[in-house]
Image (cartoon, rainbow, N blue to C red; front, side):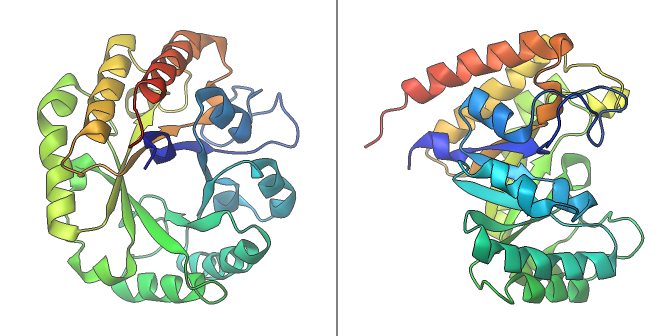
Length: 268
């Protein structure tokens, strides 16, 4: 596989720019999801509009016409999640690039316990109109000790994140984490990177420390090239910060680095 196909841009499409999107505070966004994906050369998108509202969802999905694969965010709340999975299943017939859903903050979902029975019901609804759709769950490295075995038959992949980023994690802990998830669960494993330093600053605009930003990406790129196969892809969150001048250095460095990475990976 061309390594470029392993990259995902996470965020929100916008019918009107210059407005704020979720989890950006009062910051105005001029960069919609599809624009950020195109800028970095990332062929796949994680569409989170569906986690918050179904209003004009089709109009917004239409912006992602060039995405190779789309994963849709699932609403929080038990009833909303089950209903949402069914809606996304139906939407995938009209938008065949939809390949599945993302359950954000898995095992921490707001308003209800995330039981295996609930995940089973979500998976059933997800495949009600399209049996090929996949279910991904978001987990954080500081709770990776939680036993997900009771859920495994319903899960197709994990999206792992480090909420508060540290040099020690990326240099010393990441390899063992990826190995453990792949060896214990045998599912697809993606790892995310925050452009905004949410773990320390919330939604107050504060880019990830530049040296730590570079370290994160170089570690992930190394694992994507490794023969071990522990890492199946990586995700950048989120598009709203990409067009913000305060994040320019990080964004420009990443684009330059990905251009180099994609161009120097021969396909055989």
